[in-house]
Length: 202
Image 1 (cartoon, rainbow, N blue to C red):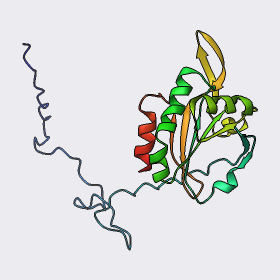
Image 2: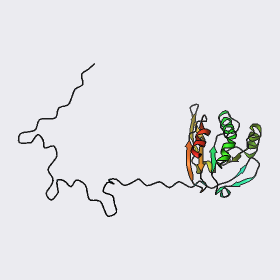
Image 3: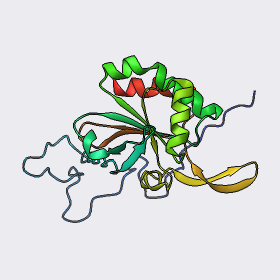
């Protein structure tokens, strides 16, 4: 094993004390006063200001049709928390697994007072088929012009099989009863995601 080399302090120069490691105070400056006195109402032990708590952003407003063709206005959701999740496409492997995960967690979600809203650019008719095929009891919203996706900044450039193109970044947002976003997940991996949302909502 290579020996560890210790670093020795340099020898003091001629006329310099070996024990004097700090510079002498300037004229008019006390050698003991190294920190300014606290202001009135400020604790002497508080050396740094506390960071401010960032305000939670308001969830973007929307009016979209669900799988039954009914218009849902986000204004009607105020006063109750909800989960809004974006997914790329109906009846594809990852999106189906995610949707069934939320479906299977319906009982606990209701216990927590949470409503689930799934959003994709698919049509109302596509949502209706998707919901019927897999017994999805929660709301699926059609966002064909991707306005809500853009408002949440989940309509992004993606690279697939070496090709660049725009698409939905799988993302979930937990919105509080006050209409503000409590928690967000972007670039979601389906496995374990529903459990993570439940844990955050408890």
